[in-house]
Image (cartoon, one colour):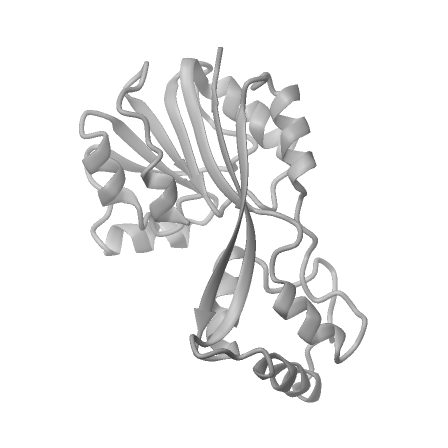
Length: 230
């Protein structure tokens, strides 16, 4: 997903300041700087630990600075950014709140470029758990319509929204669990006691029935959103 999003970066910005919103360990830092070498980036994440790890991995520099902040309440001036980039980081935000905040910090002709998983993702995991019990085991994700309506209300009337189904393959359910933990999709808010050892083993056995020659599939229903602030 990240590679596809980086390929959509614009050639020029109206203001040479950009955000990687919800950057985690800033895995796209090098590609972003290669695509836009004159731009000053801020790597924004709510987790100080993630930003510290980005520094340890050598991804921060004079033109790629860390900023620990909430995506819905950015400590940045109005109309200060030429681009807001975000990959698989805003799925637990309120779509309207975060897009309104993005609109606030974007300069005129500034662009937002984001990828987020939608409802309908993780169907193999959902099906495997449903074979064990009927309790929800993954938080619900916003829908395409949620993001479309939020974009319109935030002033991105001409936003380009594209929906794609993307399948990843893994060697084990443990590998899938690590992937989900990285996106925050490994739990249900307020739920406890849902993943005892026996239930987990039963779910894994069910998931294994879905194995293909490529491995265990994990399906993402992905929204790519591109918009320009008028």
